[in-house]
Image 1: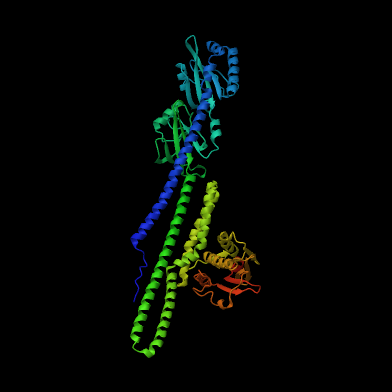
Image 2: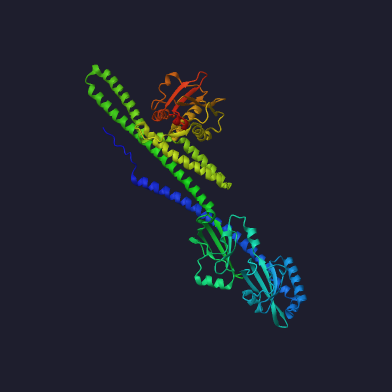
Length: 609
């Protein structure tokens, strides 16, 4: 009677499970991103307030100095007698001394027409003396009787500065203006060694203070031709070519925060994304912005997504294995029930002939036992066909390695060691690719598939296999050593398949010496003419003589939980690679498994041919 086994799980169930897992992965990445943005917003808010407080303190330091200087009578005397050279010399020295004490960039005195009569830089080649600055807004405001404030690029010095100007009033008459220029370059130096960047721009959005030098004198937003013309006429930036910073707003988070991309192709940079937070300094006419890079935040979201994806894949594999075992048990029970029914029917039919009853019963029992043996074999082949148990057997080591690398990545992330995090993630990607190739190897048991044969370094393949399994035995007293009689030996093989065979042999050897006080696995590398040999030796109890001829048979195993597939598959893979896998016992005790491979032809050999 044919058995109808639903090998395909119902499509709606699978679809719902996949959708649920994808939703879980997306939600995890989104929550990680949202929490990161909130934390970034909080940190940026604190640093922005600190930066603005620093700017306010620097401005407040110079704000009232012009008013104090304006009370000095020698300034009034010079403004009343502008042609007096002794008075000019006196005021020059006075302003130089004041400028040195307050730490300003420049200090100078102008008459009511904007002509500079005396300046702290009177000894320099590009002195302000006899220069007219009546076009500057700070002079115009001071002449109206109030404090003048203005940022500009010096038309004489070419240096950035913030100007404070105050009128000098005598007998209710405004005789002139005293100006103190504040240097802005030190602000950038004090705040440049940080992960975040700062930008201070004017009302038109032109950057004049920034911790990123290549952003200086760039427009945060596109400037119209009319605006550029007005900036040129004001001589605020003294002929500087104002360029566009080329920013794109990706996401507006609130009124003063957003995510932007700066398409900066200088110094190898491209498409840098930042979280930005800005605040106006209305009294100074400035807009202050902090830009926090999103690289670390995106890496955190990627790590969360990878971990959740791996957990989802692992859950699917476990669910599939459980479902397969359940179906196999149902099949066995169904077969046994059918066999029992057939047996009972035969007993009823043959009860008429009492003389043959015992023989018929024995024959029926024999048929039942044979049928059960065949059913067990059929079940094993079905397991191989569905590849569930084989996948669990062959992918155990890479999955364990991925788990270890994921834990390491999380620890390194907490320590902010991003280089090590990146290295662990690269290893996880490599192991994931390797797992994909390993799953395809199980098809070799029933049919031949194309292999990617290449020249591989035997030493490196062995070391890679040891690295993958070493974490599993890190708490074991047993050791794994490599002994090579030749250096730089290379062979033609499929590197993934060869590595998987070595992993299988090393695991078997470590299990053979499990519990020994001085357990040791030694891997020898030898060469004999065109053949390379890899011996995996252990000092365990060895292989029973009666089992040596059977250990490469499919499903033959001496382990209670083994499937007997590892050595069988390994032997078939070696045959496909034009090699061989053999086993024997060592004279001193223990077992030896030998991989035989053809040595790769070197360039010297090709020339000899």
